[in-house]
Image (cartoon, rainbow, N blue to C red; front, side, top):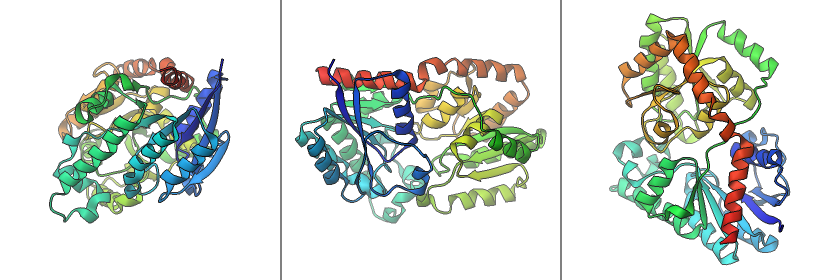
Length: 403
């Protein structure tokens, strides 16, 4: 059968790295893949230490639509698969050029598949959202900023909906919101979950270092970008109440705060000091892949206090599935569809300190319940392995090109 020539456009994200490994593990030999990466890769991306097949460093943040178009015209792939997030192509403002990229790819004659890692519905954009979206702070004094941002979302998402031949999202909630908010055609959207690694091997050096660091205390974990749109303040307040009853526990806030949220991490640390929790709350900062796996393996349960429904913790949740770690989260959006309450974890109302504290107490005091949740969430793993995600993604390519 004819090989499919695909150009994947991304910024060396962990998602693309894992998807490429999935293609190899699935033994898909009909795929001829080239990878279009940025000319300048951040130090964090370089730490991935991954080699991409037929990698071509072709684009920069300010000119990426034209640079990628030029390379596509040279290579003439059957399909271009673009990974899209607001920060994929550099700064927040660089996202405004994304419709131009799609229009140029359409002119080039290649089929376009776009993976949207998070869908922001227009109704989510209110005053609180704008205030917590610090990249927009420079525009915060402008009258009508909320309406302006809704228009930007409309342009970005509707350009994807209209110009993409296929759209991949990580959950049914995202598909529904693309249809409701941006008029997407349902048959154009494929739901392909975020993948899970198939290994349980832990780095012994990292494991021993973190075991020494936590000093045999039980661990509650938060992992992800530390941003104002995640209700880490309520998590810290709830942990303060919980810790008075059970001082054996340590709260690890794992991850770093992006530069455009400057000052937020310092506010959280000040809060921890004011609540006299400095010996029981640890901010880890940036973690290597090895350390992330170790921390999940050492955790009793993980907490996802995601206020906004569109911020489903795809990557962090995948680690929980892989290491069979029970989940506590806010019962909103995609997380509410991913986690079955009282079966795989506990879902609580958003920004409710007492409810979150009660959920922590319930899991901490009931080992049988934790084991039940761990077994159930781990049962998701066989269908979420990266090789299965790669097969589903390749199926999207095949069906798209067969139309």
